[in-house]
Length: 264
Image 1 (cartoon, helix red, strand yellow):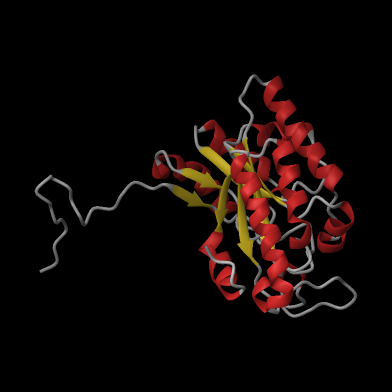
Image 2 (spheres, helix red, strand yellow):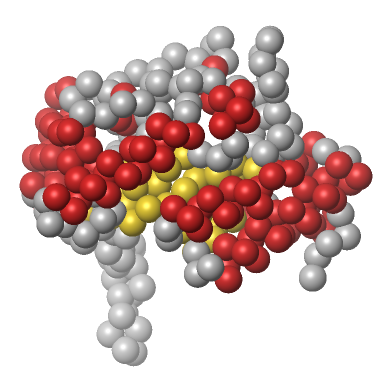
């Protein structure tokens, strides 16, 4: 006999599902960028958008399903490069849903798009360096100046609508080419008023021709790894002292520091 409840003495049902905390809607796997390290740049990759019929169902059904959960409207692709993303997100916003997004902010946005992003709870910008030349080499079509301009535009739009600014966060990969100057990244993040940063480990795909290919930190020799880890530790300390929340996805730095003899 299968039980459908298991109550504790305190009246807690151990078999009951808890409330949803977050929901992710993968609107598209296409992207406007071709970062040198990303699967999107591989010849085998084929992106696609969610079917319009499914989008329409989500606008209708999500509000009654998610409760107070945060809804992330991005997956592997760039949501803001997808046709119809504004209408979809506005439908969810009008229904009172709390939206978040990870976006590269690497293109020009219309006033309507800015106003839509300004209504989000959190806008997390995917960026690995604020060095213009390095960003161009890694992400090819991205511009530091444009990203900063878009951040300012979103904040301005929020102010004009009498809304609080979205929480600004960053998503940053750590690998061989950007970690020597990761301290500069931390300083720029502080200057931008960022509230949180997620650092993630690189998954290696086959090298591409005629680009600056990158290597994961765990592929480096101890001699190459050690100074990069020192830079990372200093940057993390700087961010923490500035009150910025830091999340290292999967705690991938700990085994690297142990390998380099830098564990606490």
